[in-house]
Amino acid sequence: MRRGLLGAAVERVLGRPIELAPAMLARYPELADARYRRGGLPPRVGGWALGEPTVEAITLWRTVFLGRDASASADLLLHEVRHVHQFQASRAFPLAYLWESIRRGYHRNRFEIDARAYAAARLRTRPPPRG
Image 1 (tube, rainbow, N blue to C red):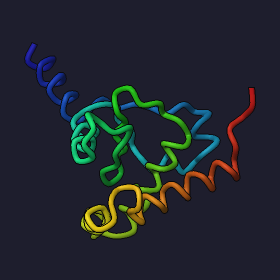
Image 2 (image 1 turned 180 degrees about the horizontal axis):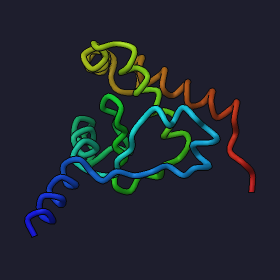
Image 3 (image 1 turned 60 degrees about the horizontal axis):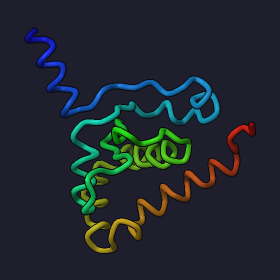
């Protein structure tokens, strides 16, 4: 019983681990650079920062937290894995990201612009299968 309560509490805070579909990983191997979780507190805190109940996803270091109802689309996952790469490139990334968001806002934040461009370029070079 205690273990069940502890597990439920951990899941409420950190979400639950999820695995990406093998076909998605084969198509976009860089997605293996991250760990993935669904739900938990991070997407809600990210949403609150933007005046929303939740965000589709938020990345903290190597972990991508997907919102409870977010679709794990290639576009979203590629965007978030770019944030994993940004975290890996600089220890100061969290502070730089925060400063960019304060100065320019979320949508004009250079790290968000970079992540959107990265995802769009990868989708152009490896479009999803048809049918």
